Length: 203
Image (cartoon, rainbow, N blue to C red):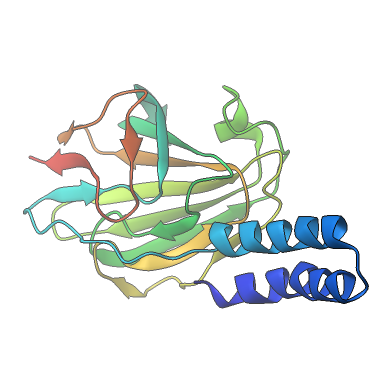
């Protein structure tokens, strides 16, 4: 459980207790339900991180929207886009072990995270990690409900594969940019789990 989740849930849970004591069970139940959902949203389950050499894991829970070849900063990359619904865990994890070489926050819009232009126009945090034999960039992208991106690390930090690095509050999107030599292991429509699902293998 992310500790901030307890803070967010405390208000509706307290209100539910007051309403219950006042003999108002229906609004009390609604408050308890809201508090329970907030606690569920901020869950932070343990994950078994793959040990396969060259494995690149998903940075988030969600559904794969697209796998496509793109040009990013003048270089060819494979982009894997993942949509996080309200019911997915929103803790983000490092796709590879390595050093954080760049962190760039970009303000932007709040389109629906599944929209084609969301990856370009929405508010986002862009993180590049340099591993032993590859470099991976992933983007934390806000959605129509996600108005807060959290990143808990700093440039120069050393990361383990699958290590927790941040979260996006409420529905959102994550994009992973892979070098051409990485062989993608997922396809659109497939569900992935942050820190444990293998997105690609470095060849």
